[in-house]
Amino acid sequence: MSDDLFDRANEFLAVFRRGADFTKELVEENARLRRRLAEVETRQDDAAQDTGEWAKLRAELLEKIRGLEGERLDALERMRSLEAENQQFASRFVEVEAENNNLANLYVASYQLHSTLNVAEVVKIIIEIVINLIGAQTFAVYVHDEKTGLLEAVASEGEDVAVFPSMPLGEGVVGTAVATGATQCSGEQESSDYGSPLVAIPLKVNDRPIGAIAIFELLAQKDAGLSPLDHELFAVLAGHAATAIFAAQLHSQSERKLSTIQGFIDLLTK
Amino acid sequence: MDRHRILIVEDSPTMRQLLAFALKRLRGAEIVEASDGMDGLRKVTSDDFDLALIDINMPVMDGLKLIHLIRQEPDLAAMPIVVITTEGAQEDRERALALGANEYLTKPIQANRVLAVAKALLKLE
Image 1: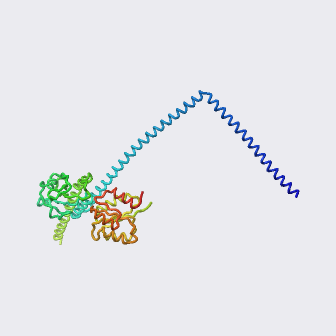
Image 2 (image 1 turned 135 degrees about the vertical axis):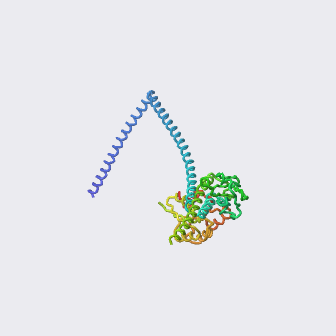
Image 3 (image 1 turned 135 degrees about the horizontal axis):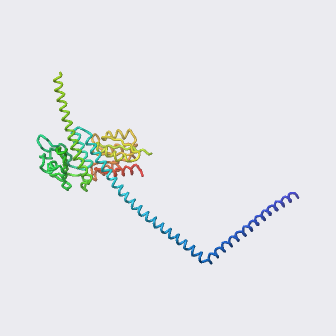
């Protein structure tokens, strides 16, 4: 019983000693903080009394503010110029994108035109291009007949090919376009006169007349009329379609001649 | 990189090449071409596609019939379909959309418009 009491007393003494130590530490920390506060107050008082020091500090701070203000203005100016540059890039991107699309159309048109040596297939491709890339509703493809000297409609869309009149070179809108080599555009949206198309595109290889494409009506959704790309496609058609038809005609003739010569050779050798 | 299988059903080789040209600019795009409605139906039912571009006026089977048949297939009910056609009349548009097409673009096409529609339907960007 007495041992237990003794142990409890010792425990209490230990706790009390620890409390005393902690209190001593707190008092010391308090004193240290008081000293630190006193030091700071003294320095503040000194600075407040020394006007020169204040002025120097103020000048330094003002200089710093001016510098930062300058930097802010520079940054704003840079941001403005970057913004302007960004807008230039954006509009350039749109232009390049449009140019890219146009080039794709022109590439596909010329690629398809030169993908065959069959006259009927070339004419079919011309029709596809005029429908799908230009957006024409009614049109005819004319081919120049060297024997008769007439331009004759060999294929059409939107109307029967028979309704499109044949014409000699130099006569009518189509004949004039082929004779002069210049695309004729009336600027109208539609023409019901099959002798007078909205657009007549001559097909020529050097000075040799090959034929023409005559457009009489555009698709309803082309209500804005012909675009600059359409005119570029006319130029592609004028050159490449003519070459493709000419090459296909030559190929067909050479095939026939080859067959005839082969027949002769067979006759002579057998 | 995600792969996007796109079916082009169009009888004109010129249009097929032009559409493929535009769509190849999509990252991961794999283009399959069909030259008429029947060919398109065969391909769309035998393989998985994320998008189909279908012309209306085609030989063998037209585009509207193809869309109708595609929408009757439960597996293909959700596949986005873009109609690409020369038919610009409002009733043609409404008919195609009523049959289940998601978009209706008229020819002559603008490549960037086709790309924008494809991106939206494929939920890209």
